[in-house]
Amino acid sequence: MLTGPAVSSSRRESVSSVKSVSFKYRASVELGVLLEDFRLMCNDAIGIAIRKKPKGRFELIELACPYLKQYHLHSHYILSACEVACSAYKNKKRKSMPYVKRAFLKLDKQSYRLIHLLLRIPVTAGRYIFLTLQGSNYHSSFIDDPRLKRGSVTITNQSVSIAFSKQTPLIEPVGNLGMDINERNVTVSTTDGFEKKFEALGEVAEIKERYREIRARIGKAARQDRRIERRLFAKYGKREKNRTSQRIHEITHTIVDYASTKQLAIKMEKLRGIRRLYHKGNGRGASFRGRMNSWVFGKTRRLVDYKAAWLGVPAYSVDPRGTSSYCPDCGSRVALLPERKLYCAKCDRNWDRDVLASKNIMACAVPQDRPSRGSSEGERGDDGSNPPSRWREVGLLGQREP
Image (cartoon, rainbow, N blue to C red; front, side):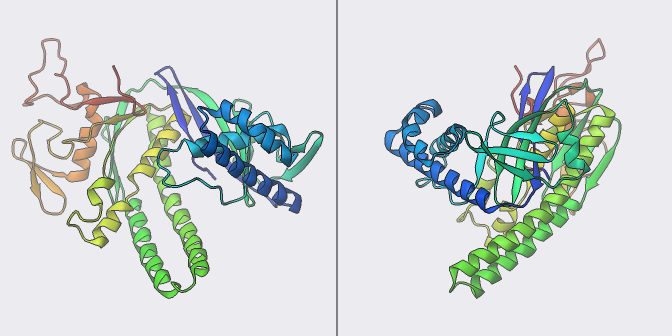
């Protein structure tokens, strides 16, 4: 199971990507005590950070080390607790004093040892806890791959998450894939003529709507007992997450795998400020706001980003402005028709709105892929090249190109 990987890039030659792979295991009583001690260490370090206001993690370690040594644990736990505390303290979005509620622990790659599915973590100097991880062939493919580097490990009372990283050479794309993310579908178009709508995103919207109604009923039935309410919210929230994540993973895996096989670069819209359009008081109904705020465009994009980086597929972001307003063949403005249809008077052609948008997104970063006949951008040059694209280009994985 994949859990929130991070992606970073090093220009165009290669890309560094990280996957966090989750393993199930059975927690012992001794491990439960260790998880709780680490949680208390994190909260103590957060309190010291709030009072002393250190400038960075290393200064916090110097301040907190004398206090955290009283737990009599391995010194690596002090470093990890200060790292967690520094991240919580420097979070600009926090509205109150941060506090770690759930027991867990985090260790860097020098602190643990993994021999196939046997994990050894330290308690004190010379004293260890051994965990037997439950894994499949999928998990073994990460553990036994010598090309992958192991990173930090995060342990809860239910699972163990290990980060694996690698440096992958970027492929030299021979074409491009435009990807339009809508509320109920993901539409892709490629330079080799392939077009497809992934309607499974509509199932995600329906699942979220169904669970929104379930949460409303829980709120009415259990409002007298907050403990029952929280327990039911957690239960059905986990079900909703699992069912929606599975469908989004299937969609993004198919898209990235096709782009990798055909050696295509992926182009996506960089959507910003969407949530601000659906705040309370903007004249929209509560049902519409709830539907729009549950739109999974951000998660879909993040999954494509890290899966593309893992396979060495270039992923770009483009300005979404006007991608559904102009004909991809001639560049003329299109007219709006019912049922998400568009009409280009110059080409005398009807377009599906999502297909048109995906084609324009595909052509944003690569001007030569859009035909220039009749375009208001200018005529084809003497050397046969197309005029510059009217779309603003954004570089690899969201970084603007010079």
